[in-house]
Image 1 (cartoon, rainbow, N blue to C red):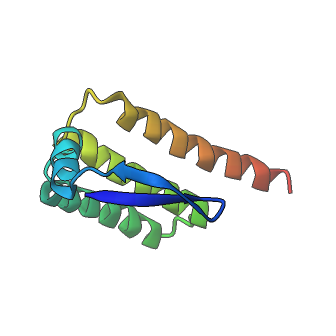
Image 2 (image 1 turned 45 degrees about the vertical axis):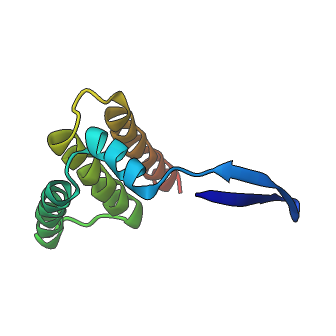
Amino acid sequence: MYYVYIENNHRKGDLNMPKIEDTLKEREAVHGDFEANAQLSQTLKRVMHDGSLAGISLSHVQAEALEVICAKIARICTGDPGHADHWHDIAGYAKLAEKAIERSSHD
């Protein structure tokens, strides 16, 4: 499969795009089975949301960071736990939430 990329409204050329099945196979090796991942991710998110309904108030940033972290945890548990990028991503989303909290405390 080929696609054309555009830069500054000019056709630059055709690039070889991987087949979606190849991409899915590569991702499954790192992230695990999608259905198992989805089930665990949604379970973690449900637990998080149940906690927030118990009186814990989360900002939009905190809630989103936690949701993405849940998805990353699910990938670790259903995929390759040795894939450093999973852990790096968790640290990154936690840092984004931390920065938002620090900004709001200075307001």
